[in-house]
Image 1 (cartoon, one colour):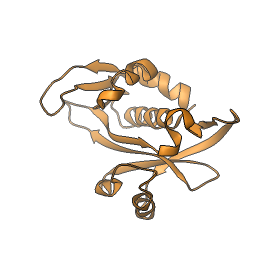
Image 2: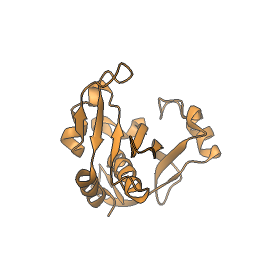
Image 3: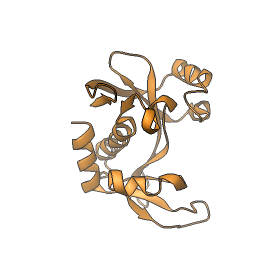
Image 4: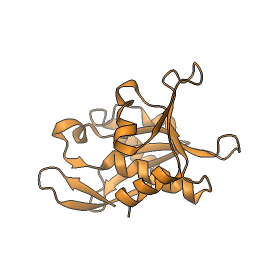
Amino acid sequence: MTLTNCATEENHEAVIEPITAKDLKIVKKSKDRFAFDWSIYKDQEVYKLRLKTSDLILGLMCLIDHADPETNAIEIELLEVSTENTRSTKKWDRIGCCLIAYACRESFKRGHGGHVFLTPKSYLLEVYPQKYGFIHVPMTSLARPLGFMVAFDEISRKLIKKYLD
């Protein structure tokens, strides 16, 4: 998997790996880089994305494995890209894309057939279908007023091929 340097357009190898307790302390101290309090996810399945040549965390993602037959999917509970890599001034491109594709691959590995879902923030409601091919499922309960976004097997395969292979 690669990230693209926005200034040079060069691709650089990146890795996704489980976050450590040490990483969480670093993230907590870098409030200017990450808006969410990731320490509340310390006992959950959290992954970090970094360049292969650096320890600097560029993105984070919390996954929930819903193995029950009724859901049978991976949920992206939270995904965050470091502030210096958002908007038009970002240094590295494809961080969120690689994290989402990783969740899709995990869904296949865990027997969920590539099914991945997340609850979107209102300002990203249009991004997930346009950029990633997710399908919007309107409100299903008061707990999810914006509904949720879901990727099924075909969409997941495309994302894995495009961003991880």
